[in-house]
Image 1 (cartoon, rainbow, N blue to C red):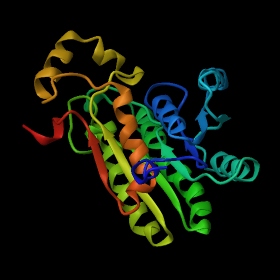
Image 2 (image 1 turned 180 degrees about the vertical axis):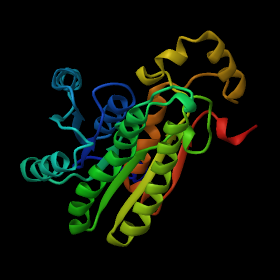
Image 3 (image 1 turned 135 degrees about the horizontal axis):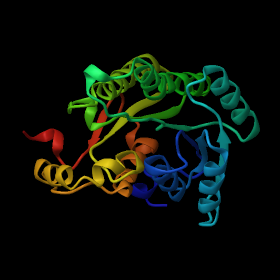
Length: 257
């Protein structure tokens, strides 16, 4: 194999991708599998998860599926430990599980705020910590947290979401600071505006789409497959000295006023 190809080869590696039955998580799982990794899909809906797994198996990819709630630390620990015992080491973790809720801040339901905290931040801590313990023992591992353009920017109606994604960015830096000495690389991908189920309401809003196209230097919504290259890079040997970095894949929206 040529040196350039080896830098991005994930053959023999196993990747766990949370929240991967649809949308960005599913696309990243497929991309890592196409780069040679064996993948473990995760979600809370067993039927959706198995359907996603069967789709990828039908493409000849190596796929396992595991249903557990990433906001439940005990469930995460139990499932991560059993995955390590049953199928082997988790070499790559993609913390993708997340949710959005749009409401003016003065009307935001405290219960929904707490749900955002648990889904978008606590899950990153839960799965990151449990997987990292195994990676630390082996002296190697890749963790990729899915942040957002809202890690750096705010918009009306999503202040709590913005807070959670800002926290994901700083938690990524903290993980790298604590775990780089053990041979781990911990980084984040911060997507801009992508056509996903999470953004369905915005995609359907002609006024918002027109605004976005003018605001984004690339002049369009992102396609989720355009996130795959960043994920493969951060999962592969090519990024062996990249740590604590937040990689914005946003068509240039954070680069300009």
